[in-house]
Amino acid sequence: MSDEIQTPATSRRNFIKAAGAGTAAAAFGAVSLSAKAADQLKFDAEYDIVVCGGGGGGLPCALFSRWLGNRVAILEKAGSVGGTAAKAAFWYWVPNNEPMRRAGIADPKDDYLRYVARLSRPEQYDPALPKFGLSEWEYEMCEAIYDSASPAAELLASKGALPYRHEAAVPDYWAELPENKAPRGRVLFPKDGLPSMSDGGRVAIRTMSAAARRDGVDIRTGYRVQKVLVDANGAVTGVEALTEEGTIFRARAKKAVVFATGGFTHDPELRRNFLHGAVYGGCAAVSNEGDFVRISSAFDVQLRNMNYSWMAPISLDKAIAKDGSLSGIFTPTGDSMLYVNRYGKRVVNEKLAYNEVCATFSQWDGSKGEYPNLALISIWDQQAQEHCASDDYGSLIVPPGSNDRHVLCGNTLQELASAIRERLSKHANALGGMQLSDGFVPNLDATIKRFNGFAKAGKDADFHRGERIVEKLFNGPIQKKADQKNETMYPLSAKGPYYAALIVAGNLDTKGGPKTNSHGQVLDVREVPIKGLYGVGNCVASASARAYWAGGGTLGPIIAFAYRAANAAHAENTSRA
Image (cartoon, rainbow, N blue to C red; front, side):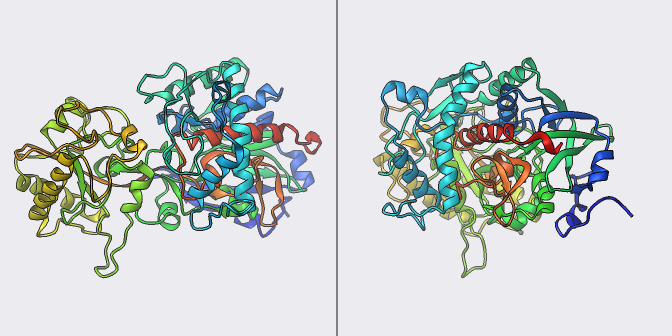
């Protein structure tokens, strides 16, 4: 008889998932061992803390753990560290940060909590309630961000791992809300990043990984963690990983295992079954396949917030091609530019923050039984092409010589529509056969005339484009014209050429997974922490629900929870190992 204990939870440990197209199937889960089996198990290496994942959550968690005196390893599935954070701009949102305090910018905790509650749970928000409508868990998690993001950022900076500059002028995405008493000043950015603030991820990963190597963190790339090892008392004691060479590597964790493996952006099955509406992939690292959702299913965990993700429009062509340059369309560049649906009608304020634009794609027309906005079409003219092109922040309008596989062109609106129809036919299987309506060209002509009238007047009577601070932030480069009354809008030319690109809903990464407490400990269905098991970042549940509070609203909280998880894991009792 095997010494492995069979329980209802661990009986699911052999759940099988294809690791990706063209790769072998991988078994995920947990292995529960009797005392005898645990004693006899051979480990390839021993550490105090094993961090699974070397991106924006794993690197700082490993650093914090190491600075507490622990022996620490990072096991990274990809061939290099960085994960999604390496592709990110790496703004990080730190409420009540040190530069704000030095400058006398007030950011009271209660006001911060009202702001995040108002956006996270608008259907439940009540400023008169003690927790403003948030659940106990959501409130505690949001408090933890306020309490720990700044100490975490300061420690990273003081150790040379993540020096920053304070971007005092950058506004939150909802700067105008009355609940937001500190609408500017919460964003920090890697010190040596470009003035455009577009390359922070590369800088941050470089400085943090250098600090990790300098300070003795054992970084192993090409190690895909597939199972956790659990002793007879139910405590996590280590992990089992599959290396690039196809060998099994077992690492003992005397104190804890911390998962920071990212969300499930690149697992189509999980996307289809948990996310609302059609999401065509996204900008996360290709290694973000929901591994921890699969592994944690062996522990009777509680899944939370699985229906939401950090959303952004993406190029349909690049998403289908699995183009490595795919980015969220953070900056919808172009003043003489608009979005229309398959009917040639404008349906959204094009300059809204990226997360908010994405709600438009999933609007359902019950009378027609369709998503009329499943794919939107960005249309711009030669003026925008010449004066608004950019290589930054996922701009669809790109300079000559850039990757422009997504761009269509026509000398007239009729020619442009023909090019769009041809491209839609090419992608018909991905769009449910969506095609342009018969009235697309006349409707588009009328839409452009109406838009041009608004642009000349300087006021968008349909969607109020350019009226909010964040819309100017995301306007992109323009060459201001003497007669331009609204910097986000300018009339499209009456003559071609015209350009177009197809855009669909995507994400930066998902934000659901096992529920943790505010110290990063993974909780079971009884709300009891699973001893030795922690989670940080997009592989676990975010209390933000539908909200995207500000630029860096992903990474700032992730750094805060990495700090808290490292401190809690450090205090774990090592006698069990």
